[in-house]
Amino acid sequence: MVHRLFNHGLLGLGGSMFNFEKIDPTEKKILSYALIFTATQLFLIGIAVAFLGRSVPTCQPNEKVFQKGEFRSVGPKRYEVHYLAKMWSFEPQKIVIPTGSTVDFFLASKDVTHGFHINKTNINLLAVPGVINKSSHTFDKPGTYPIICHEYCGLGHENMHGEIIVADNVVEATSDLPQETVTPPSETPGLPTKEVPVGKILYEQKACVACHSLDGSSRVGPSFKGIWNKTVELEDGTQILVDEAYLTESIEEPLVKIVKGFGPTMPKTILTPEEVKTLIEFIKTIE
Ligand code: CUA
Image (cartoon, rainbow, N blue to C red; front, side, top):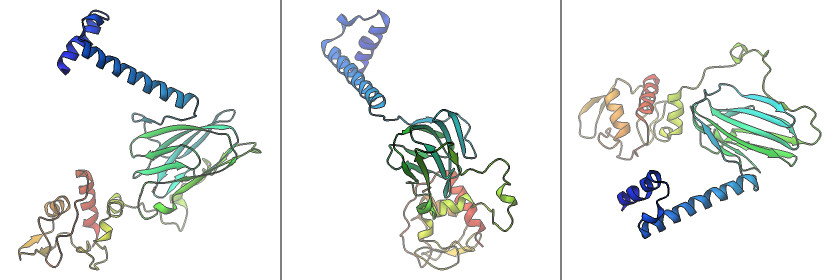
């Protein structure tokens, strides 16, 4: 049927411009329904965009991901904001714009996946590492529009938010972004600038933290402290070296080898091979 549809329907259409008469009646029906359905969908999307103010989020995967937040005025009451989502804040955190402004939002992530929802609007995006997501909104009503991260991203997730302030009497739109002349944070004395290792982020995000401590204390599973390159005893009495192969297997197939004293309780966690490697690199560092 599909084959026939292809030969008669599509090739028929292409080969000898609208040879509609030759098509089997049933196929004709299917083709017509498909066309009507597609046209209706496009029409409805058109209405939503043109009259209901719905914005269609777009992804720009080929553009180089920006590494810092940016706030730009591109015309009267027209702004472009580059939001950089990172653990656990948005950059910029706050912008102030006049009522009636239209803002193009560009969103990128510096580390893991974050959410980006602006309350009281239909802007709802994900900040996915490696891509830029885009959406627009016109702020017709004055007020404070909180931005929240709605994708669990680690310990500080709850506190990850920003705000957009829309007011009538704004002469010049502003943001809380530092000016170019501000010294980079690494030169600020007394502040720790060490970034959180990605492995640790995974350890928290993928909930390893729930069962495996880092300080040697026993939880549902063995602690990660000092585990690397040590020999552990399994349920059946065999001794095994904690190396890359053992850890990889234990993460991917948790029930194959059970450490003595612990139950077969570990769930399978969905991780890419790269994530497994990163996690193991992190476990190696827990001494
Ligand atoms: Cu970022 Cu939750």
